[in-house]
Length: 291
Image 1 (cartoon, rainbow, N blue to C red):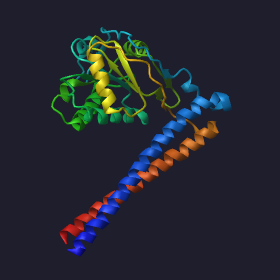
Image 2: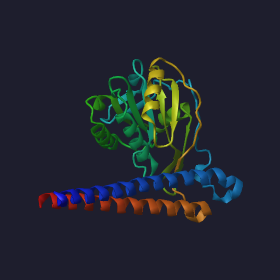
Image 3: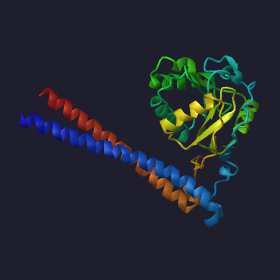
């Protein structure tokens, strides 16, 4: 009995340490994103040359009570033509703007949204809709379908397939939508990527902007309250905006870039170490259990 108890204690301690490292890796990744945004905000005061040209004009303006054009045409994940009007009328809508090939924060935006919605008691497709739109006109329905399969599957509730929509579109429709909600971005032809900030928006059933959530994490309680407000056609108040910028940032352009690069490398290293430790703990636990 003492041996079994000791084995359980060792496994528990090892798992706790591994999870602690995993959390530390995530915090380091967030810190790297924060430092990147901090570098951009302070570059003009400390070193004007640091500001990447692709971030000039990038941001998200709060256009509360702005009507999203309902007749804008897109294509859904099956390739069928749709208008935004088909998602308006009865339920509030959560809008996320990403591009599907983004190698940086777009995936974190969708992951943060997924985590929040999994903790909201309301169900996608019943009490509200989710519309994810790519602002990259080169994205195709096949990629949108793959994204939907991932996130609807991870959400794990029956209504996700009919209530979480992944759209692609042409440049004019994308520009009209992003301008309506104040989402400003740039395309960098050198890296073939987009520079943009991160946020999600909550729309009323009629398609008016009711609330903004900035960053990559969205408190489930606040999201739920925003959905309740929007369902009653209420418009929220402006919120403080801490922008996280997503772009390729060359460390050679300034001292802040070096800090961000090192923090992100540290985050990746800590994540790999923590995952390895966690796997080792689980495998050892399995061997002890078999014995």
